[in-house]
Image 1 (cartoon, rainbow, N blue to C red):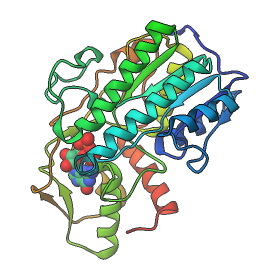
Image 2 (image 1 turned 30 degrees about the vertical axis):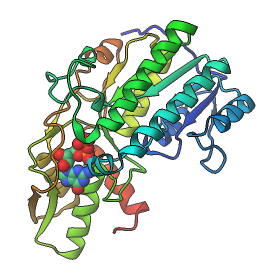
Image 3 (image 1 turned 90 degrees about the horizontal axis):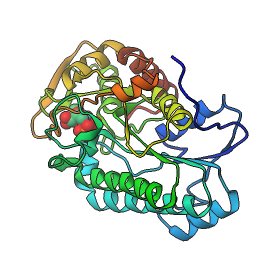
Length: 317
Ligand code: GDP
């Protein structure tokens, strides 16, 4: 399929906001094969929650294109117990970057949202247009509301000022440089860290939060980064675009896959005192597939790659 080219990154200064995070660093890795200059701002240099700092940095560096991969992120427990940080930091980061991008004549901006923007009980798989059709999942509503505001922000700047700001909504991601701190991590890195520790300790079982019944869709972060660059080049529109694999597994199946990858034979012990969160969060990825992009890395393969990274870079807790 030939996909129309709407924006060229060639010769451009491209700012990846949030380059130290899992997604931002994957976007930086992906951009290395493009003919562009990659800009990054260290946390010591620019606090993205401070408007004046963002404005000064952008006025100095004048990026042509921006990937907004900076966000306060975390798993179900972090979201549920640190609501102020999740709503305030995300609102501030997106408002500062989007407004400064308009003021500095940024040609193209891609804002990353999340599949948790959709209603808790939305029909599955979720098409883009189920946004704001029902109540949110309470455990991550703070983050979701901030990300929904980010969508509306970009759409407003597109309508009022004609900015080519686009929106990608990725599903649950995992990959290199993930967060393995069990108090704030998502389930995939948490299972890698816990199963690895159980194997080393010779433990008879490994703890899995909740019932194991919720279903999630997992996309390898390098694939997500490839989709972001694809959208940057080939998409220009107001509507947000889902980014995922279109397939889901139960949390039990995810845990079993991690056990297989790591070679652990113990039992799974489900802790029902911990929340399940949304029952399902499967994205309909038809729009992106119609444009010509599909995910390449299967779950087991991606988990093997993530585990290899974990072994090489993380001290097991
Ligand atoms: P969510 O997609 O926003 O719910 O985020 P998570 O990735 O944190 O959690 C997904 C599901 O995995 C939830 O049902 C969790 O209860 C479950 N889960 C099982 N064990 C763990 C764990 O050790 N850490 C996390 N974060 N979630 C876990």
